[in-house]
Amino acid sequence: MTEAIHAEGLSKTYNGKVKAVENVAFTVNAGEAYGFLGPNGAGKTTTVAMLTAGLAPTAGSAVVDGIDVFANPNEIKRRIGIVFQESTADSDLTGRENLELAAALFSVPRKEVRGRIDSLLERMQIGEAADRLAKTYSGGMRRRLELAVGIIHAPRVLFLDEPTLGLDPQGRAGFWRYVEELRKEHGMTVFLTTHYLEEADGLCDRIAIIDHGHIVATGTPSELKDRLGGDVVTIKPTRTEPTLAALLQTIPGVTAVTLQDGAYRVKGTNGEQLVPALVETCTRANVGLASVSLKRPSLDEVFLEFTGREFREDDSVSATDRAVRIGQVQQAFGRARR
Image 1 (spheres, rainbow, N blue to C red):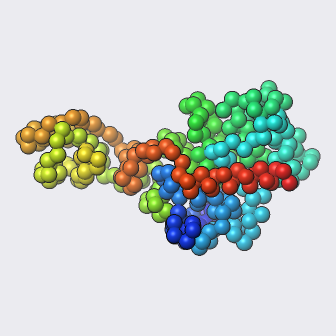
Image 2 (image 1 turned 60 degrees about the vertical axis):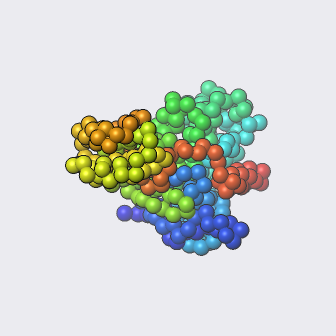
Image 3 (image 1 turned 135 degrees about the horizontal axis):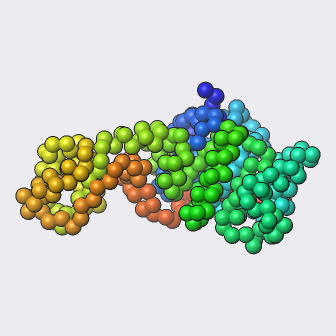
């Protein structure tokens, strides 16, 4: 199978001491949708910046679409498509003008420009607004315009760095529908980061989870869920009982018990049958319960299992991610001005 992206030993250290990414390695197959998930500050944006030649690594190598990223950064920028979390469309240009500018920057053959632009405007359902200034667009329209800008040159690899953050559910669903159409029709490889796990679950063929600069788990969504070992019952006691974990572990069907933030996460087979036994054990131990909840395996549980944190525990952007993103946007505007 052809490789679209291959990273080996990829590392980035800031100021000689802050290790944002350390020894990251993975392969993305051509035509694959590959999700790159992690808490804020885990190294997602830094990795994307290195793969798209927006940031030089401290160590390691990366090949994208058959090109050595760090030996040929300008060629990589011409070949790939990128949609950032931050808006990069020029607000003082119309939708059509934004696409014309992108076509010129990416050296789209002149005879193809009009046809490509008209096709993209229709596909992204912004044809009627094509000659309006981009600053008059809604959030969803702007995102669709930026996706069109990112693919005007028909790239084989598309990077999406949290492109739907802030959109309403309808806007997010529409955005991903267009991405799926591109994959099916053109075999485009998609590398994405997202804050919405349901997006990754429904779209991605495989997923990597990064935490503290290291990849801690990889696999298909189904494989990652299966690694949890069954259902998860969360028990929140009214008081701390040092022996409770050991007591819960003795219940038939329980495979693991962990204590996180004052609550016991009990993994086991057939969670519905486990709940009565868990409650009875707590009652015998004279431990009152504030709450009991049952969850089937989900990517949220996968994320918590491998990082120890809820996926959106902290919605703020880290200083490292902010610096990288500002640099990416400035670089995009710099190319436009030239």
